[in-house]
Image (cartoon, rainbow, N blue to C red; front, side):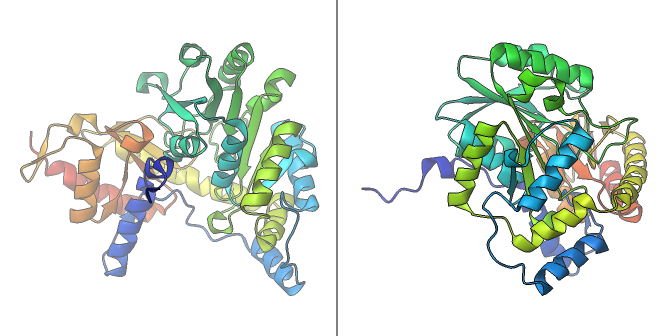
Length: 400
């Protein structure tokens, strides 16, 4: 037999966000003053009470295996959080704690998909969705949400994309990379399609606390029994609690799906980190003032970055309503030249910015929009100002 590598694995693209971040870190290590708009990671330290819970776990010897799907106390806390915050009733047995939100998504698609099953993914999308679907044997079906529709797809678009092979829809609100949010009414219309066409909804709500409108984020699983029975609600602690490196994600699902996912995880990774589970418990059950304080800082940065982009020639964006990203349209720059080099897409702009201006942005071809780039405002206002000043210098150097 040929020693050929897995064709499925070879079809997976590397993460462009991690590639850009690695390049920025390389330049920093060489002494360059880099402004990094790339990584989706809060610049705040993990709150002290969460760290103290982890230290206590170590001191108490809580360093052994836990149940594969997570500790009973953490699952109970998350069950209560789902009911209190999201209006969804998931029993602790329907909760799976995993090694981060990405792991929860991987578990979900491994449980749902047979080879050839189709998963509808609205674009712009987080670049890992199609790759995770492909690794689980599924087929990503991309539908495009236009800028004029606030980068949100409609129930009609989703229904038109359905075939006899449609197994699931990925829904991400607040959205990465756009910061857009689906309203309760929009979710209700989507739920009706999912019920009528009989497919699952994988609702990624990792940015639910990063919400800058009145009210709170709506969860599609809360809109009735029929859609509840077809929804897997995915979340985690990385973004809201500045716990990216702790790697704790979780999901709530109908009982049969949760049981299947628990079995998968028991063989693939066993339990998530025991110490991080104690930290997660402190995060969920503790004082939420730290979340509010970080959100206020993110909101200040959001408003500043949005205004700067709006005031800069040849680029534009819609005001983000959640998460911590601005999705920038640079289509006016396409065809212009920088030092004789024609700009053909956002990737060209990103290459020049990191090489000549020490600014890291994420070109969004891998998010479904080659003429857009993403900037994170999970950095200080001072750094945002410096980075935007450099972007303006680049744009002023362009020639028609």
